[in-house]
Length: 426
Length: 184
Image (cartoon, rainbow over all chains, first blue to last red):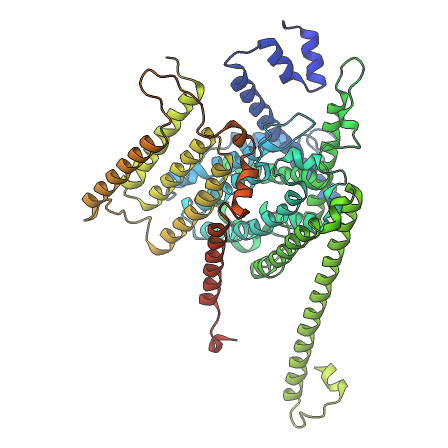
């Protein structure tokens, strides 16, 4: 097959350009490595560039939520070029390494964290047949790669040689390592349902999107994704008011920008992962497999659009949460994780595994099985809420008793028979 | 003979892994040693990838780099005054260390060379690219999972390991449990 510019453009449009290039180049040794390299370049560049848009979107949406206008000067009425200007400013700043910093860890950290957040995109399917690589350990690969970011936080905190940076790094690591546990466990549920860790298999298994099958798992994953990416209400990594920006306090210019970049790439990736694992990825009632009579695989393009809509819908929720919720305290955050999320997720995994293997499940169709799972999930949710309610009630009673006792002591003479008004007055 | 791309990558990765390992034992700054150890682990993970053992590679990344190295670095940070001092990289046991390393290396060569001879004898072509059947490679994760829980494979070691981990966890909680008089 020889190269034709028209066919090339057509394959670009229906996203089969790699298959086309394989056909053109034939069976040569350099083909696959070169195509891999091009693919990696395209995906990385896309991630780096879309961050410019994401930051603008975030500022604009939060501004609207808080009844402000947001960026509105640079680049027309909507401030579209504001972030471009910001990026140019960051890029043109001097690259400073503080005199007391440890050179290697200090400069390695921003690189590593961006590399880690870019590597994760390799297994995310954008459209049917359009993904980096379909690993049979897909989700496990994501979790493994994301653990590199812990290392880079530690390096940043230590290399800066600053006590606030180190404190911030310790906090971040406590948070990341803790919330990795419910994240892994909640991802086990879709893995169980699809009986595969590959992202493609998980999408194929979603006749009914998993958010309708196991909503609790989706909720837990979303919460731990918030924590893993360090966004509000889990943004004590950089809690400006307490530890003055945390681990990246000593960074400036583009080195600081790299941490920022990694956070946004990571958040978008988590949105994409949520869309893939719980919302059915690029699926839209089978339309994504549509091919026209002329051989145009327009379904692929449609799948791409569908995936992006789902991904940005989830991303919007991320922004929404950021625009509306206050920050946790560090002890609340860790207690919430270890005493609530982890036990709940363990119970959930156990329950889904048992329900999936119930004797009558094998004879049911996809939709009715989904219904059974949904019912079990809602049951678990109700039980959890009831336990929480009782616990909160017990705590409130104890608190009230304590207050009443204190009021009785303060009022002096007759601790035994206080009038209710006296208690209320205190 | 032309080296294949796999062989070139293997060479680069091996050199990096061994170089990082060398830095681990020779560097006088403990933190740098720990970082080099991470690089070395990463190299080993890359070799697993080259051997088509993706699961093992990801586990290596998650466990050794994400957990054990972090633990090591925490231990170093909390027990030493790193920025000020450097350590000597040799102690009284260096001779014994070299001896042990050589013995283990010899054992590896002897065992692999005798029982699992991958490399063909001189002049012979390589019979199979991999040590396991191709069918098993395709389905390696599922096979691994089944082997962990099937009665005629590794269910007992697997369960024993999980009981041991549980015991360690209970022990850790017990150690961290506040004593009765500490209660506020």
